[in-house]
Amino acid sequence: MNSWRSALPLAGEPTADFRERLARQQAEAAERRQQALTEQASPLNSAQARINIWEQLHAIELPRDAAHRLVALIAANTGLSIAQVRAEQQRRAAPRPAAAAVATDIPEVPTTPS
Image 1 (cartoon, rainbow, N blue to C red):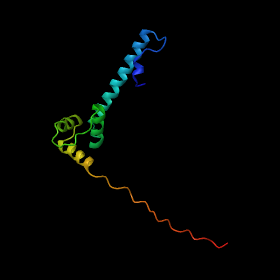
Image 2: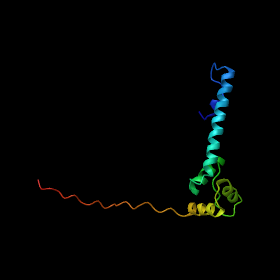
Image 3: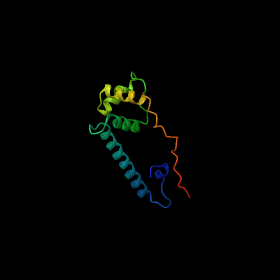
Image 4: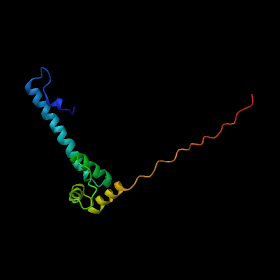
């Protein structure tokens, strides 16, 4: 239940139960955030994964400008070097390879005489 509705008391729910449920939801959200913060700096994750986690936590995309002031902050938060963050910027900026060409010539199937 991640909607704003979960922050409202249920019909007939006692105030104490509502407060307990809200506190539990807040504790779970804090635990998920802490786990994400740990994963964002984990050397077990690739640079791409760490930056993706950072983007999700902060609801902002990796800047395209290599000189952007967030590059150093992202590097510090993710445990990456500035060069690694810039390499991810370059990887994202690189054109993606075109999808494999689909064959349009369908070979004829030999017909059997009737």
